[in-house]
Length: 237
Ligand code: TMP
Image 1 (cartoon, rainbow, N blue to C red):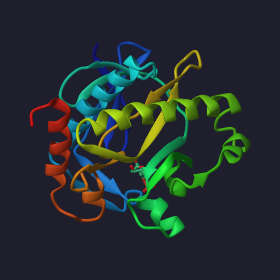
Image 2: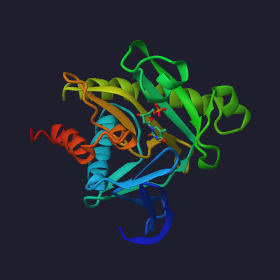
Image 3: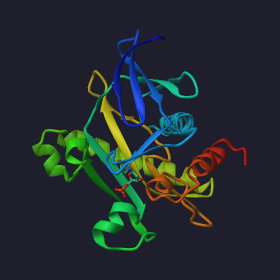
């Protein structure tokens, strides 16, 4: 399959059309942003780690019955995925308090929840991805009731699979953000990426942060954290 024209350039990825009208090629960049693009930087090697990690997770999830957009890894940074229309909802699951949850509700980070939480943001950079609930999403015609129910069920399933998988690597899955898309026939599939950019990972023993919070919060050791997660994933400890 050949790349044709560039369709889109986002903060962390470029998307190209291909010779197959049902597929696009995603090209992962080393660029990193935070706070809706206010903070900018580069994380050396991130593009390749996020591409390969996302593809490993998508394949694991497919095996566990979660449909995804994944088609084929082309290279270190490039992957063929199904062309989808992205549902403009950021779906956030949390197992442990951190980040905006702790800030919004005035609680410390690290409280282990008895049950995971779910929340939605309206994916809209101009508005700063505001938090919305299901009724708002229905009112704005972002998704139907049926689609929202499907997305919720898929997101909780992803959480169960990933929580168990990362526990086996000595990593606590604190929280993460998912995006979903619709293929031509309307089927909802998991899209976007699953990486240290979009998940919080804490070492189970030391609680060291192994994710993009090291960049967001200027903690140093950003590249090392991404590499550590990837090393555990590929088993070269
Ligand atoms: P939050 O605590 O800042 O709301 O973040 C929750 C999770 O979502 C965390 O794992 C990081 C991820 N996330 C993104 O993937 N993209 C974003 O733009 C934001 C704000 C968070």
